[in-house]
Length: 155
Image 1 (tube, rainbow, N blue to C red):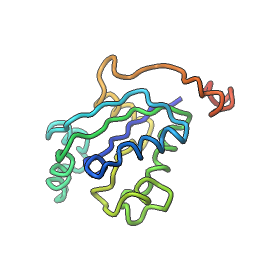
Image 2 (cartoon, helix red, strand yellow):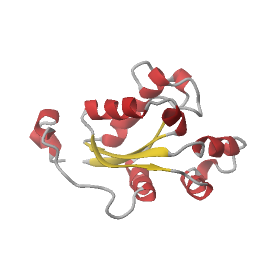
Image 3 (cartoon, rainbow, N blue to C red):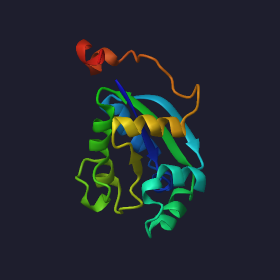
Image 4 (cartoon, rainbow, N blue to C red):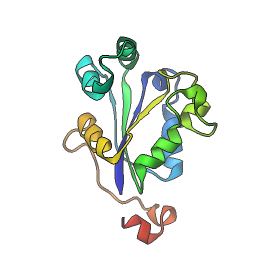
């Protein structure tokens, strides 16, 4: 099973969408193996968005991401990275399909409710960036047999 990172951004926090976003992931069958509220700072944002630091919109992104704490989620499931990416929708919320988190809840490219890891490799890096030792829990939910075929769950 894969573990992936989701950040509920300040736009989601300020709009009171934390429960809605978490509920969607839980209803899908993903397992929360880590969760915390964290105030981001320039250091972690420059590391996390290193590929965007030199872009002209980065100062605006940085202001947006430090407006309130974010909710950090580590979610586990079969193909969790891809499943979460499909659930979040296109980065620009106006272009995101209805039924996705951004498509249903957002109107902006920047204030787009959530960040989600884009690959298993980046998910491992990002989970380690936002969660320390002892903050990711390894357990088997009792609902697992109702979510996956036993062979799927073994992967």
